[in-house]
Image (cartoon, rainbow, N blue to C red):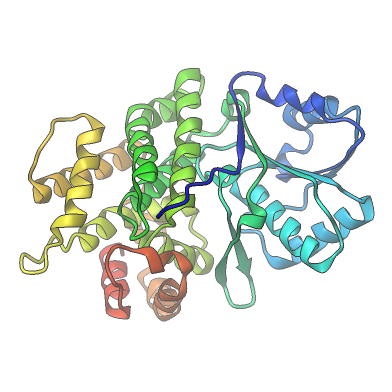
Length: 376
């Protein structure tokens, strides 16, 4: 038996943010990216919250470290917050999730409602029970996974993503694609998640390039925002795989943007999971799933799983090139020496990552080493 539970309520569409006006007599703690502090989004939010007390916390950095979480909990407790609104990309939302979890566990706060308002279309964090935290002293990323941190309400307002820079659009959009594909072949996969993943993959290939080339394309922005949410809903049911396991470990040590390292890894991980280069070990069942996704994209169909897997890899590489994304870590700007120095730690971190546990194929230290060698 499977239990499918979507805890998060979605507010979707134009002016969805305005529904925050319904909040009255609350102590609202707004966790937001610092560059949003003085722009129109936060001013809008403060205006919508005029019937409540409001406190902004902007001490957020990419890959939020534990000390920022502790600082946020202290501020939240001093303010006597009963409501959290996380506004921004994955870092702001993940940080707010961790503040809620550890703050409530310590008895410092009690949150009645948790809102997530994404301003990028990538992480899907607004609908997941995942939070990725960074331990600077060990240069590791640690997933916090518990239903206690899943937002109560996610607000998907297209206006909030219209000004996202083109390169961020590309990075986050490719993160969406990786979420959908890894969920689809996860060892925990189910039919509901599969439907969500298939739609997300279709939307990415149809709209990501458009959003990247023309940020004013409202339809493309809206569809990518939806794709991000759908992919988040999918992997929240299934978890992910070795692509994210390596990305977490490598991103923490090499400081490569998360979506970019995922996109560099994705073709090689697909080939690995299907054992594409090994005719004796070829995994036809996983390859069939990749074939179905290739067919979802709409550029011809095939019933041959090997050909379908190869087609999916080609189309991902083609999209990556159209988005001016690097194909290797050296093309990104890292040296081979840097990669060699960090290889051991990255391999160990990837194998210990919780996402790796649901990869469709068992992964060894040698496997991670081989994948890394192919993306140098």
